[in-house]
Image (cartoon, rainbow, N blue to C red; front, side):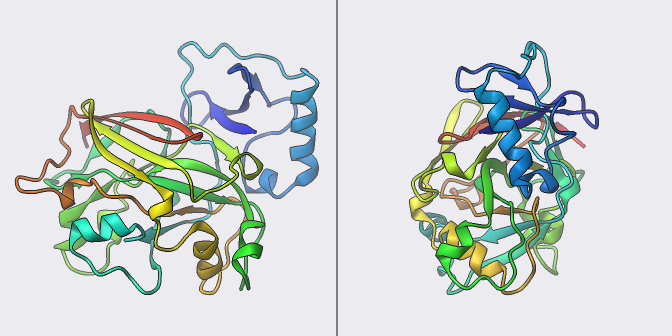
Length: 285
């Protein structure tokens, strides 16, 4: 299933995109799309049954904003330097264990919402990523096979980053990763049963119509199953938590000088195969 949330910011309603591309209203079945829903097999079954029976009313998608596909996110766990080609382009040694940092849930916006360039920023960068959404509590997961059973679904994430704040201003990466609007998510949450191999997904990103990133999750140093297993050794993952699994080569930081960092007025488009497409215009904060 492709689950999403539509409407003005803060007043989104749950919806489903059916196989024919029609937007369907879920608000008569579930109050919203959150961790509670993703952990409730019976509620998900009711959605599937209603969709299969053609019982869900259609929504007029014309002019309707798409919000983040998930609300009530507890935490966003991010994996840094998780692609062989990205490590090479930045001159970094591939890590021997996953590099973990956190993003605050309040960085999440809709897939087509405006992204704000922070005040004083000169190095705002792009990163297309596969997001993993947790559906079952994961605590000390023992194997990669077991890890995938804790995944509810997948989505497109844009891990926007300010590289000066991240790398040159002391401390941890967090202040270059947690600026307002720095985690567009969606358009949909695609349930795990529709993603047959999370290690075979193409990722692409364009800036002002020019292709900048063209990679595949096959290049991940630590695959999705290992990331979920590993993270669960250090923190408990709850339904509705999100893991951003890293970005392939092609970011501005990895390019020759003068590096083409983002500015107000730029347009970024990105996609992950089968998971939908995002488009953001940048503006000054």
